[in-house]
Image (cartoon, rainbow, N blue to C red; front, side, top):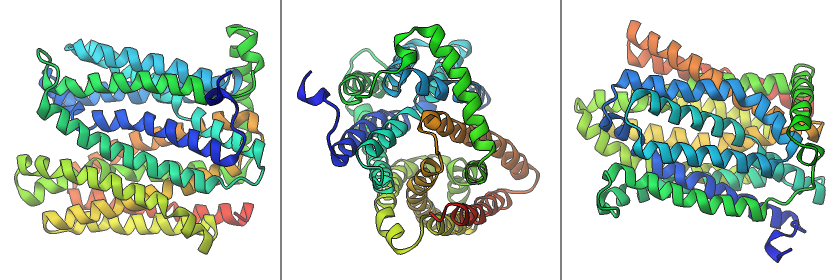
Length: 417
């Protein structure tokens, strides 16, 4: 066994491996974000058809979140992430050539399988491995640094994507597909890193075959559902996730529309959104980095409630901004708060899980709730915008986000977080 594949001996070593894997996971996402919709439009899809292929991804995530979380608890986090990577690789290869609606829907369905498989295992591996070394491991610090790495990786990936399209390094290929090729290369590196860095004890499901693992998965999913339903803290936290994700449409989807409205020029809005997104993700990383300082001053649950209220206010600012720079500044502030809120929520969620054997499944339940909230929020706020106006829809999303704040305070009372 090489030195790099030995189990980490210290909490710091676990954290370093976690951060490396986080960076490799999210940098390719940054490569894809600036070109994905443009690539689909270039392939001849309408905006309505793009909605259909995105829905294929969301539907697969909703269908598979809990079973794949149970699979991770049964066969191991590393094995599950390697399976996930196979789906991601196949999807990106198909994306290079797919031009019809059915094939592109298949691409996003496979990306949905990937997303369901990878949504909980890395975080669960980090918590289990760190707590095995030190039961009082500082999880908030690890998730804070993880959020920082995520934001920086996506921001740098987005900038790299623009540069790759301009340089057009692959003659004969559509320049918009060049970032997809680069993402495939980084995926190969990620697979190698998962295989080397994610050491964990063997599990019964991994050694007794797929049938045993499926049986384990069923029982783990049932146990995790019981765990959530019998824990007032977990019920509160997944409700936070639903409300938060419902309201995210107000800034994730509607900010470009708002910017187009105030500029009255879609092309200018698109040109401004590229650098704005890069800056926003870097500010999101800074927000995540601030979490240890924040949670030293106030209880984690109080920090969560404060951040939800603050994000509600910044989203209202997006709605009420008159000029483009007002929209940009409000959006960047919203993303900074968002970056801080994520590790706070993850820390509270994982501390509320009493049985490590269902940790990945509970994390998947939280992720599944986020998907449901996002889908419902996207439809509801979109209908509200059509029936009234964009400002009312954005403000409504802001109030839904802020409504999650009291639930964090309830978690604090229950767990004394």
